[in-house]
Length: 171
Image (cartoon, rainbow, N blue to C red; front, side, top):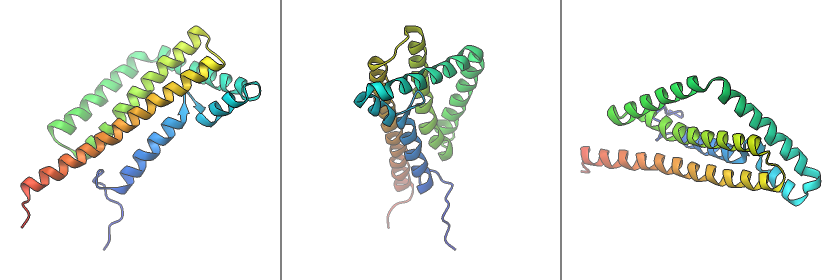
């Protein structure tokens, strides 16, 4: 019988599809604004600029509301999750924990960056071209973290393959 759904994470095509889709979506939506809207606003600021400004401001207020109302809970829960993942990944060498670690930690860092951008948008009242420049820059940073996440996952695969080679010699 052929098993199409592997739960071994790094050996599963579903994990790689999930990882690619996660970072694709995370790179496309920056502070709740789709990248194509930012590009349209750069080309036609009179027509699309106000929409991008409104979207960014609405999502900035949402981020700010969450951060102001549950900061201790968020920090505590995040620290617990990261510590548990690190322990399971490097002490017990559990593959699914490694897969979640290389996905979740960069996503947490990207979210922290977007929270900082949201706060800056609200405090400095950024709009128009400066807002679009910051959204594009944040998107670039998000993409770098995505590359780091995918590279880390590939690194775990290499380590896994090399460790199996040592344990199971080729005959």
